Image (cartoon, rainbow, N blue to C red; front, side, top):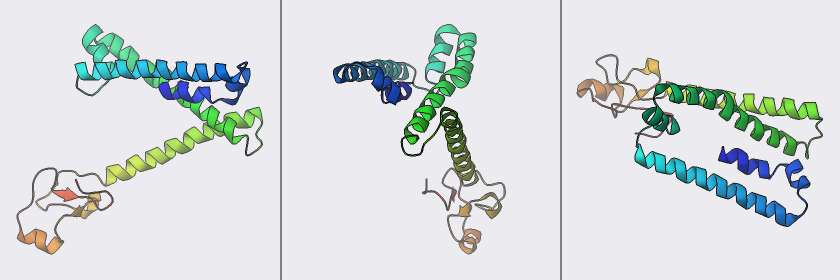
Length: 177
């Protein structure tokens, strides 16, 4: 959410509504202070509960499964979606300074930006999943059919014992673990 607050300060219509430049600076500093308070609060929670889940983990420990469940779905459906929509809309409005866009075209451009970034993310996750290090399914250290190349050459792999553990296979398309 802090990124949505920070980017909204730079929204063209927001800056035009302020009476003078000094008020613009005060609003920007106030938004930064609010974002800092939120960040420090979440950092304190992370130090108190050092496990994955963030605010969800804190709600689960403090109030039980129902509030944590409701927060998780609210985060997914409302909070993240609203922030993503706001940032994409601001991007499209700024793109309108370089390419003439009507109000409807700004909305379509924002939606297209979200779909495009989502597709790039999906393809990146799929590529990373294909190249991830997985435990071997057979007696050989690695099988080429699941996207991972063996650490030693195939001929040498037959002469040595199969390595075990997370370093058993190193992917060709990412750095070694």
